[in-house]
Image 1: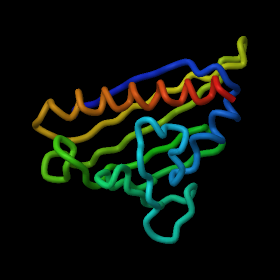
Image 2 (image 1 turned 90 degrees about the vertical axis):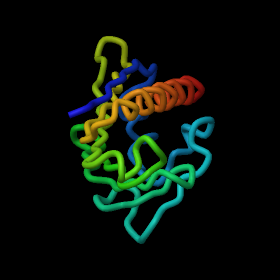
Image 3 (image 1 turned 45 degrees about the horizontal axis):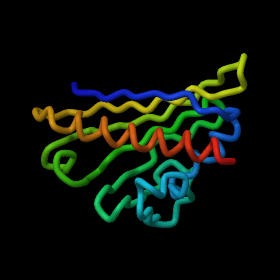
Length: 143
């Protein structure tokens, strides 16, 4: 099963980072990477089952928003090649926050797993995760 993993230290307390990330319908913290985030349906941005469309092409569903463990899990239901529903199945992404207690910072992990015979999805997701994590760190440093 292919997978992707990236991590970063964000110089902000975990509660502040979580407040920025937890709303599935709000990607304003990554406006240099995500130009549009459109909520689909009536579910709120922290409700399991919430749906969104990113940049008019990534169709995603919130699978978990765990306030106690600072974890988000989501699926990509369809998207552009190489993560289209024809090329990738059972894509589950996860964002996990952990406190760095000595400095008051936050360790952020972004990972995913999926089924596919193509290796292209790994490189594709790798670059997106890097851009999103950098955007998060920059946004939090600016607050």
